[in-house]
Structure formats: C-alpha cells, structure tokens
Length: 290
Image (cartoon, rainbow, N blue to C red; front, top):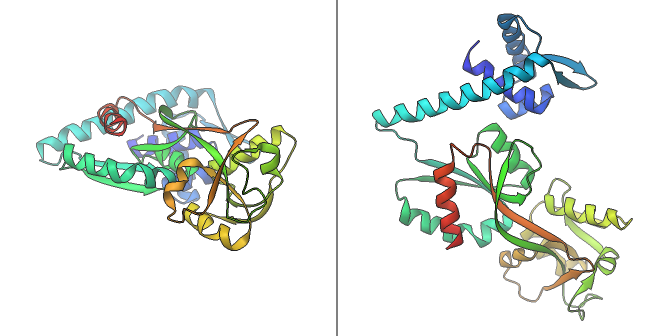
C-alpha cells in the first residue's frame, strides 16, 4: 500500500464509479482498476462490490476511507513543511470562479492580493459551478467562488453575497415596458439559455418544475457574454444572475427582476479542507468583504 494507491482509492470511494474516478484522476480506467486490485491484494480485503453500473463500498472500504483521508492530509502537510527548508514554500493559490464572479470580483481581488501577498502565484480558472466542485474534489483547485450550497457532500461553503435571477430582453421585446415580471410571464418567453451543466440553468428549471412548467428553450450557449451579445439579434429572452450585467457594455438590454416568487442565488467560498485552507480563506474573505 502506498500513498498513490490511497489517493486512487479515495477518488473511487467518493465517485462510486470507475469511469468518473479515472477522469477525476486523469488516469485510464484499466490502470485505476489494476491499482485497486493491487491494493485489495495487499490489504487482503474486498473494498468494492459491483452495483448496477456503479460500485458499492464494503464495510472495510468505509473504515479505510477515514484513515486514508487523514494519511493523505498528513502527507500533504509534511510536504509543505519540508518545502520551507528548500526555499520553496508553497505560494500558489488556484481559484475556480464563476463567469459573473470573474467579471465583478476578480479584478479588484487580484489587485488586493498583489498588495497583500506580492510573492504569491494566483491562478484563476473561469469555470461552471459543477466543474469548480469537481476540481476541488480532485485537488486541482484550492478554493472556489461558486453557488451555495455545494452539491458535493465533501465540500463546505462560506457565504459571500446574495444574487438573484433576472429576465433579460432586448428593446422591442413584448415585456419591455414591465418593471418586474412574474415567474409565469417569464416562463412563457422563448429562451436562449446556458447549457444544462450550469447551475443557473438548473435553478431555473427546478423553479419552473415546482410550478409544473418547462422552459421554452430555443437555443443554448455556454458563455454569458455570448448570450448577452445574441439577445438583440434573436428576439429571445434569457434568465441570468443580476450581476451578469457587468459582463456586457450594451446598456440597452433590459433586466427585469422576477417576482412571484423571486429566485435567489447565494455565492460563497467553496473548499474541501478547512484546516489546510484556513489562512487563504481568511485572507480572501477579508479582501472580498473590503
């Protein structure tokens, strides 16, 4: 048993699926399966059982998981401590941010980070909420700024600010004269929306489903700026976070709050290991609250 096998085991335990775990680890499925066979042979216990298309952890796997997480965290803390003696103390901070966060928070955040920690290398990745959570679990991101609550049980969050979904239309649209629109009015509009992998789309569909409705989808794009650029040319409407207004220079677009009911969004800091990221979380929160 080695640390690499334990890392592979943790990924497989959390994903409960060889394909997803292999993708998370950037590893082929046969290689992952082979390492798990070696681990089971070394420990002389069965760790997983087939269950449909996925895997079900055994009692031995449940026991090993807690110990494996502790060992991996201890190994990472040891590595970071020893880097200090080589003059290579870890100063890289990998952040995953939403498109709206990138536009509204990141420029000022980078400026303040450079003032407070000029020796840090800050890596900013603009991602969907689902991808931020996946990369946090995989360990390729340190902290995310994304929607709360996280969908993955292994992740934790701290609220930064609240937002809301609004209907966006171009001048000349049938709803241009309305200061606010109801959910029923918005639901009747032909829509240009983000893809289904985006949390904003999921929240909108969930809200409609509660009312027994489905979105009148006409087109999809995977970038908010592209949607905003297209609305005037298509005559379609969209539903986007209010902060997305900062992504677009065209001030002629009309943003309509949705009422009856309003659709709230919460954005916060996402992380996996609060002990390891405690200092970075405290610094980011202080800079963002300023």
